[in-house]
Image (cartoon, rainbow, N blue to C red; front, side):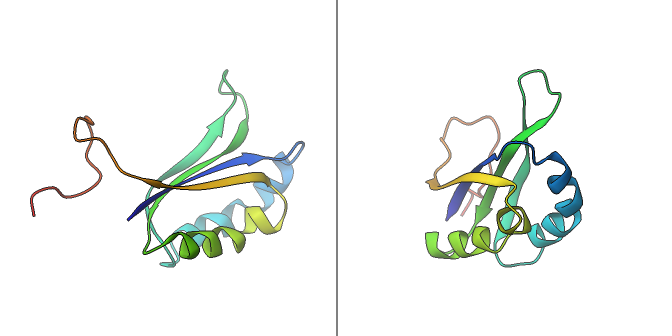
Length: 102
């Protein structure tokens, strides 16, 4: 199942984000969840990060929530708010994330 993880940064955490980025990035590739797409949410002018958006495949919400709880950005206080929600892509989406040929 696909899960969308929407994370908003706390105030004044740019340096903490930079210091923990490598560990956070390594965790994305750890195999705990299967990342599909991820990246920074940025200010409207693109000038600075305001959060993260991560789309993953995982068996259930609990797996995703455990994954998030142990992410360096969560542990170090970069993220102030995280929302996890099940995601189903539209049949009309111009980009397909799941194999529909089976």
